Amino acid sequence: MGTMTSPVHANQRARRYTPHPLYDSSPTFRMARMQLVKVAEETEIDPGILERLSLPKRAVVVSLPVRMDDGSTQAFMGYRVQHSLTSGPSKGGLRYHPAVDLGEVAALAMWMSWKCGLMNLPFGGGKGGVACDPASLSKGELERLTRRLTEELLNVISPRMDVMAPDVGTDEQTMAWIMDTYSMKIGYACPEIVTGKPVAIGGCVGRREATGRGVVFTIMEAFEELDIDPSGATAVVQGFGNVGSVVCAELVKQGVKTLGVGDRYGAIANSKGIDISALQRHVAGGKLLRDFGGADRIPSNELLTIPCTVVVPAALERVVTEENAARLNCRILAEGANGPTTPEADEILQEEKDIFIIPDILCNAGGVTVSYFEWVQDLQQFLWTEEMVNHKLEELMHGAYHRVRTLAKDRHISNRSAALTLGIQKIAREKEWRGLFP
Ligand code: NAD
Image (cartoon, rainbow, N blue to C red; front, side):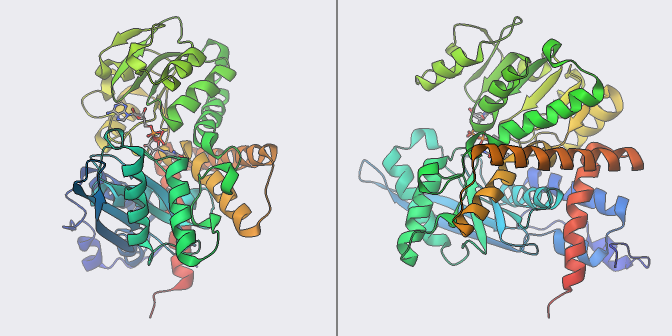
């Protein structure tokens, strides 16, 4: 049984480009769909399976009324999208950001499916979000918002159906509130309902650092392949949150200097290298990254074009675009963020710039991989050591990197196409075996 079909159903092929009114108003969703269609054409996935993969399995939209600290009531829009439940529970982050909408969440859920497929994890893709600015909400408001969201999603989440994790604007505290709300509803402690929660309540050692650590594993693999000496290498990192700050710290351990860093409030650069420990202390002290004394402030839109060995976008999607792609001045683009490169920019990077891309679903897969370890430990009530976690993470990241590179070289396709092909084909194969119900 393969994923190839010889007679092409013309009607079905024509239908694949039909935009869906619920999702396709989002440029991020259109981008995810374009990637899927491109891979489907290159690999001739069965048109019926492509049809099933093109839209999320389930999407829930809720309004979340929250009592604000000043006594007023504010309603926020919340979303949870489960793209695929074929391989196991859907798995994916929860994002709190003002730009969150249904299409963006659906695109991120779709990418999670391909990522779990590529990593051979027994999960489908999911994602959730609330359109809000967490920086402007108090801790109490965030807690009430999170508990209300959990309550509204009770019918569609469970350790066997959908397991959330942190993403932009959420953290281990958010996961702890979800775990507590869910546990109160079912009557017993249920740590396996979320991953990325504090270690004290069933979290996994090393989960907080896992995404950034995985990003740096893949960068080191690329350095080895491209014969780059880390001690002479330099980096630029966009985003200094969970992923970006760990990437910077792990790069220091490898001897790589970070020349520029940015976040939503601004960007800084130092041609001699930024003292990352000092920057971490500065930010942990509640100060803005842009006010750090050990570097110069630069315009945010100049960050990604600083000449360096590796650029790591680790903030939001669609930041490497047609507008700035030709000005990137690096050898490697390591996609810590999900969907940072638009398809138009992708072409420019590959055809005009010869930049080696480590695609998002491979580069940042360390997070979901250690989330998988956390879920397994919670289900078995058997906890691993940090050494076991990191060793297993390295093994899985190493395997995935080389599967992607082998396919890319064999078929003369881009790393992105190779990674997407591996992820998509795994789910397509599972769908073929399971068949179409009823
Ligand atoms: P986070 O909220 O911890 O940090 C986000 C960072 O991006 C912050 O420093 C923020 O200031 C910055 N930022 C926001 N808007 C920006 C803008 N317009 N310009 C520049 N910087 C901006 O989030 P995170 O968990 O580090 O996630 C970052 C990216 O990594 C996202 O794309 C996320 O989907 C992806 N990701 C995260 C994980 C994880 O485990 N947390 C796993 C895989 C992928």
